[in-house]
Length: 459
Image (cartoon, rainbow, N blue to C red):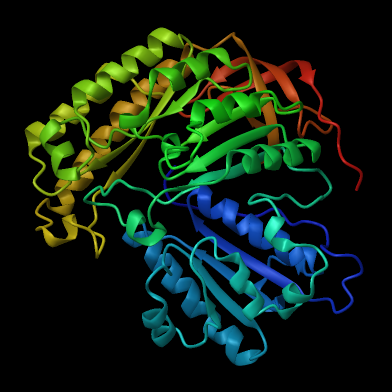
């Protein structure tokens, strides 16, 4: 998964017909794309029974917080948000507050004691428990359990992109990671269920789908028919209307030749690979319990680049892991300089209670962690600027997914961010953009042709 972030949600039109009682809900989401997809499911359920979304917590009858605890900073933000709702609960005792996400699993009793003003704690994907604070769900005509895990209600413009979870949990026990303890062991969703969901999304106008999992390329190992992620990607590639297909986050151990050839061969599958390495030193990887070596990782990257010549690469790095020496960090820096990733997500190590590494001494001073973090950022700033400058004058296909600071915004198949100025409504269009300027982290250009225009659903 990509790193911690807060997800703003675009206001939508009202949910169920009529909204006889005018009830409203507010959803606050922090964390990875899996959390965002699960919040969308909650949104769909509440829309289905006549609630309308509001961006203001004071106006809401139901408030849902979707939490992340992968880092201490994330947990601190969740705790702060929960605390801020005490005032709302005092002023309006009828408001119903729910907390979900990774903070909840196995922690309900402790959380209930700590935050008595919260009415419901439910673990990720336990959507049916919402009926405890929203009784209207029990009376709904539609079978809410059959709603897709990602559902974009019809708004002024239908959704352009969508996240679809395909596997929950994680069987790896990396020594620094809390996710397996909060999300449980891997469980793959049924193959045909996922395909049917993407077909529904395509019918709603979605053009780009990203398949999600804590270890997405482990998909299918627990299913009886032996079909894996590459087979699922081939089935989705055949769906009319899906122009782009992505997946994240993968584990190097499961990044097979079959999967690499699927990226090379399937027309909709984007030439972008997110493959976290975490460290460039074998001893650090062993203590992290990552189950592969630097040599194996380099071999996979080499095969990816030989098979998919125009591929873009992203990775994750943790600096300051317990016991990391200067020499071991230099091995990580060497890996980054050698491979030259298009994007690197870097984080300073912080212990998470309940993980194996939390039992060890956090012996790297913060000043050293900070210096190593900055060193990685300097490497990546140089590499990113060089790689983006090489695109000057090229014409790239961009899927326009919104506006930012008055400019249209979209991404290339390689997941590079591109901005352009143009009058009119470009949302949902695949546009050929000639690149005129290269910044450190994104490109600027001008549209030269529309390759595909989304058919907007009626409002």
